[in-house]
Length: 222
Image (cartoon, rainbow, N blue to C red; front, top):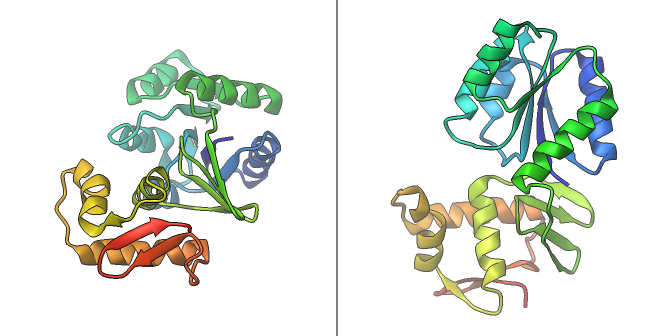
């Protein structure tokens, strides 16, 4: 299962692609305009990007170039532009493959799976606790079967707590392991805000998952 970013302005095609991918067990976040996709491209971690090129407000190639500055996840273009010049421009912008419209949904799903297998994004390593389930290979969390969208930092916090389960991680330890890898210095207030937002997403007001150890830090579960 993978977390897939889909940008396609044709709403019928967008819906059909999403349905086919969800049938294969993937989670799909759908966008219809370049502006909307650009504004939300960093909100979650994605294993693969499906991008239309011709959009009402620009080109998917611009988004591809922006994505390549921060991710090596596979990028696949859905496009009617299958001329040699357009294809070369797409590859130069950082895409991994093309599929020309009109296309078979079965072929698209197979191309997606090949790209995911190539990066290992399709391999799940699941941790389960009560009704909580998390893939430790990518930011994918479910509560009672419901997908929870996480930011990369939220995922790092949860993963750090889970991998150190039965231990109490101090504020300093979490800050070092979650924020310092980005080369950023932050104080404990940033951690408290992140924990509060994460608990809200997990519906964890009663601290079934993220447990506060007052005056020290946090731990996961009992």
